Length: 558
Image 1: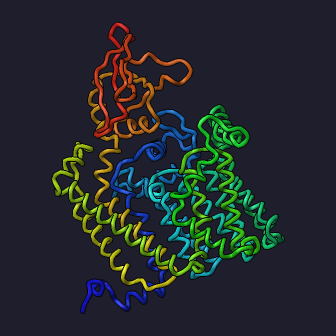
Image 2: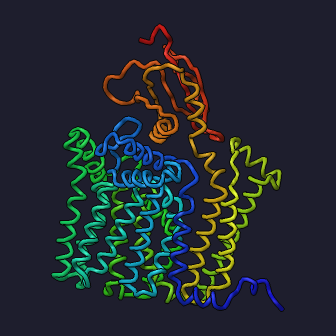
Image 3: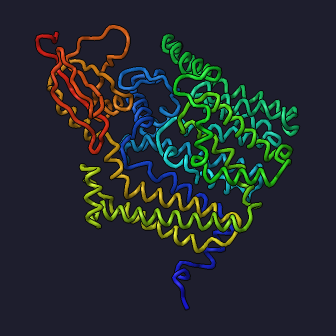
């Protein structure tokens, strides 16, 4: 009797996939990377700020001092913002400016996957290279953050390039020194002078814990790396100091000295155990596989270089992040790379029962989410079932843009591809990793193709800024702002060409005739004094933020 599974099974296809999983890995990485990169506005907080800086570079006003809505923005060096501006210039004829800029994220993630695969190939052999890449791709903490325009995507690329260089240093010291220097430089130019210390500590620690790196060739690698990294590390700070010494001092003190001081003395809001607590979901499923790999190897993990490198990297990264105490999960992204490398060897030692449990859990979990995703799309775009449609429209009353026919067709193809893969990947120890990564990709593609418009309706500031800009008097002078967040300032600038002068900044301010205030929707009271309320509003479906425009009374405006 012909079972339904036979309709999706093809012996030649199954043999090709199982015998050469690298092609499947590349396909999954491409779909995963591109899904969710385009078709939406910048989202707060980090992406809105990063795009605003890139937008400033696009206008060609200053290539040294990052600016956000007319004010210096020195939280991060400008590598990612400059890269985003470059991608925007190249691809904006085909895509909206913000979508074209966001392709820079895909570029850095492609580099990350490439170097993780190369590092795994060097450490464990060609047959394991794709396993580490797909394990990293499937981590829960990577999914959303790796599709946003944020500086941490370049940090991941730099870390992965550095670990690859350390892995290959014994065999090709000059080549390794070049890539270690580039990795350190990319980290310096994208996140500052603090994060490179993580990779630098690992590089200096390896000779002390393993004779594999206690050689003259490795000393040559380090020397070349320092020479290559130096221009990256000091180029922008020197240019900033030459252009604006006061801004350089502010950046160096706030983003370097004070952050490093946090290692000695925790400040308010710091949580040294935050990254340990979040690992359970953030690094799933890499951490249980990595833990099993270490358990199965026993004492060999402190002897074999292929285990010493990723283990040392993970311990140093985790210790460094805990010492900083900065309680944001995005800072924990570097932890995923050494865990994914270790996980590649854990599958071979995993009992068959655990392999099957992992495999079936992936099938049930992602099949369920795919069914739910399609069900919600039917309610949102087709109105079936009607009760769910009413509920979803109540949450996002301004949703008016259903998914395009092309997006629906692509989602159907991805869903069918997921089902075909389930029946055409032969039983191997590595099969659960491939199925998990493919499941994550299929679900994310569904969200990024046919549900993204609905999600974007609740996250974008476009409609709110349009209404706010229309409420401004036709003729007005400068605009003050109070309690206006950086992402909100960024989106006012991009969507409405509105620049404000913050009342919170020290020093003298101009006597502006308009004031924009951001507060909670339930907050009582108004500005009073010379200010008269002329407009208030919020984003559709947002029950938190409220924006108000005040105009100075004529007798007080000069």
